[in-house]
Length: 203
Length: 241
Image (cartoon, rainbow over all chains, first blue to last red; front, side, top):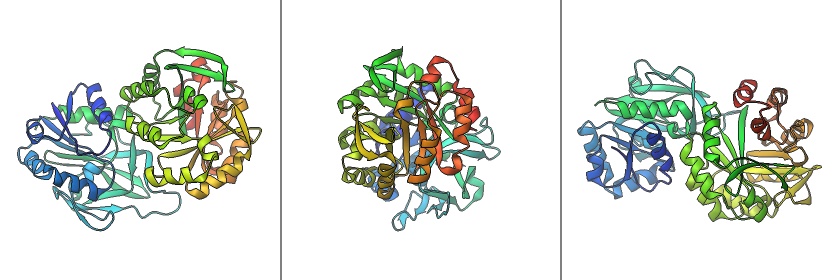
């Protein structure tokens, strides 16, 4: 069972449906025992960084997430969920994240044709090797909606990158911690492949 | 350029109308979610969904079918038709719509649009610019108001709207080609990113629209032509590349 962490960030049905379509049942929950008992954990997210972190802390879920990582349960952060894995974010001030991936979350500072938020389909370049993108071709299209991007301290954790005015890290892998900035649940067959790969992982 | 296969819903079924007329209707499928899945399978990256009952009545009424589509596909989709209340818009976004299209309600006053932009952000709100002989058509295209589509587009751009679906009502459902010149004018004179709709039915039409990308034409909605087999999703995507 995959536990999708529920911390009041809107509709999680699309993530759940996508996992169901690739053959992995999931459970939307905020219960520590269900999260810690799961084979995989997904940290989804939309909205503001500080709000997301505040809610996680209030619900006692930050400690649960540290325990997930300690127990080596594969963890996948999606969009804001990936950003919260990082040390800090400069979204509306400077805010502390989970610090599971050293690095920071920065605002796009772009000009001309590059509008913020970065919204729409864009191409990714998976790094080699990658456990999440093993069978995803270079320049596959995935769907993004975000105004901030991650900048890991150690570029080795970057498992895919995308060009949007700058070349940014759009996915990370470090041990059993994974993150994708795009929305795999909205990224058609490529997104489903990524979710299937996550479902198939053996810690 | 983005290709948007269209799914028009009436009584939970996938239909097409001609020029938006409710009495000129063809039913293509009673399982819209299945149609959506086929579009995704064919490579579509977006879907355009219209709640026709909503457009005519002003009250969304195909939520169940839209939910079924959301459950079935993993691609973003936009929904329009009868969206006049914040709660209805919230509900659609909650169900999984990536963007909502506001038509009639945009004509009735800028305050509502301002509120929507504040609450949901400019990436979620799309203007439905429906034109009949240059004038804005409203209430399911049953009425036309004394306001040009270009003026409405400019006003909305000033408020912060970024994208509009430009439909030439008289072209819709006729497979006779989009109103290319009017579409280009809409892009040039409003500064909005324009999605062309109404009459797009061949590879040539898509190529012509693609040639206007620099002017601000960013997408094409294809409806009847897909259902009638005039063009496939794959051909449309290839032409839009």
